[in-house]
Image (tube, rainbow, N blue to C red; front, top):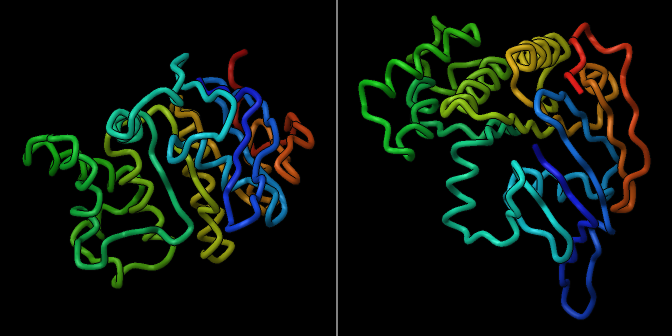
Length: 235
């Protein structure tokens, strides 16, 4: 589904350049649950941006469903992000003046989905993540775990093939964090490809495969035979 080949990323910083990725190769197959781990400054955030088509490499190849995304313009990349990839962030990124339902409807609005269909889809998704009694609440009226559930429902709005979660439990207590990981696990059982960026080994234990990076290079890949009961993706 996603393949990086000899991916480099260099950020100019005045008279010097920072090399965030150094010839990284990585393949993620449909239906996998992959955790990406690494210390601060390892390049895992840069890798996430490339996997999510939020940025392009300075050199190398990034393919999504066999298509070289490095050759696409920004409008096309935005369409790919909107339809194929759902994003979940540590800070939730909800709009505070909108209700849970309105936040979930946003991606559907930008894809031109009619109002009645947006409304029905958003309610369905909020019920799916266990928030049927919080549909009309605004973010300030929700707990951290509930806000993250809204964010996951929003990520699912356009039925993407891939969910890319960047430290989704970082701002949550352990109980709420575990509930979010179990929800991601369930989505993986429903054939969603899950890419989890985390520094937490307990969160990574939910993945089929743990990819560790350091100094912009692939350090190791560990196939997790002791994950939380998720059937391994078909190879």
